[in-house]
Length: 420
Image (cartoon, rainbow, N blue to C red; front, top):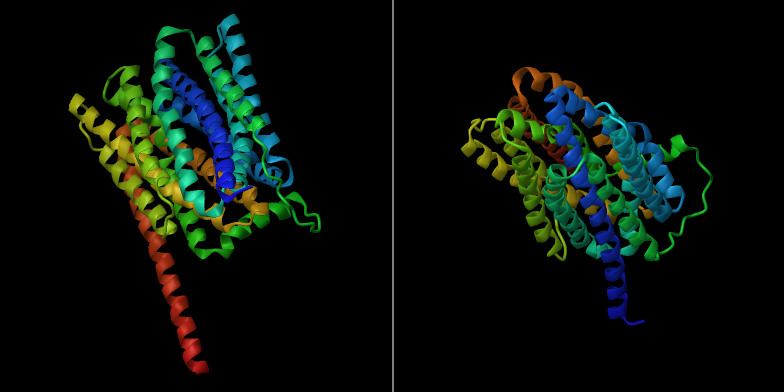
């Protein structure tokens, strides 16, 4: 097989997998938007929306170590397909029950929890599959493509969700999630994933294997400090996703369609930044670029919290959300590419499960703090508080890393001079 054919072969496989995942996310985003808006209209409570985020992320806190170990021990393709289909079946069951009975609002939390479990196992598996398909020098580009397709789904999902929510009862809306899961599973089943050659080592228990995943970050100080910064910043940033509907419906007093336009704007920012990354053949200083994304998230969040509650303020908020979408990609794409380039493929699942664990812990913890504050002071206040906190925390962690790095260099230079 010629070199050109090899390049085309990995590219076609990757595109099939990525398109399947994009279709699945299209259904998921549409259903999620409809369900959250359904909650917002029926409860008008930041506490209830905070609870929905808490329930969705709690399974990740409980199961992400197990999910990472499973992705490294077992067939990643099977895990991804099984997880996707399980989420689709859960949506189908809930749709049938909802069409037959008048279910209470809290049952949405059960549905979100079930989806959270499926997503916990699916994410590290699919992220670990990508380096098995893609040459290492193409990982930034392909992560950009992946985010580009995801952004397209994120772009259209809320619009489709709002349209379906306006036109059909919730059981019909849920079917789009079922179809998306089936499409993603079929695409992944069609593609032959190269076999991962695992070294024959002494069998470890699950706790030791998870510690191996943590060790990946401890051995790379640049990555370690960036992940610490992400964990601290996500404590403040992650809850914001649960409060977007209330910024539109409560703070600006606008309808669901305006809420979908805010989500649309966020997705446009993701799309634009993904296009830039997907056009790159490589990226130097990935860690530094990832920090820049964190600073962007903080500054823009703070500005979102001080826009006036008038229609012109909503327009400004929608534009700022595009900046938030772009900043998130600027942080995430270089970070993922750096991990995929530097981490041993046998430990890739555990490494990504650690990132999932961080987000899953910081989201519920952040919601526990942010929900009562948003209930008392308003969701706009939390946007401002979180933005200031993110900016300060990213600066402090980066400053500590630079100080320690400088000290270690000086120590090495001093040791070398003494030796000479």
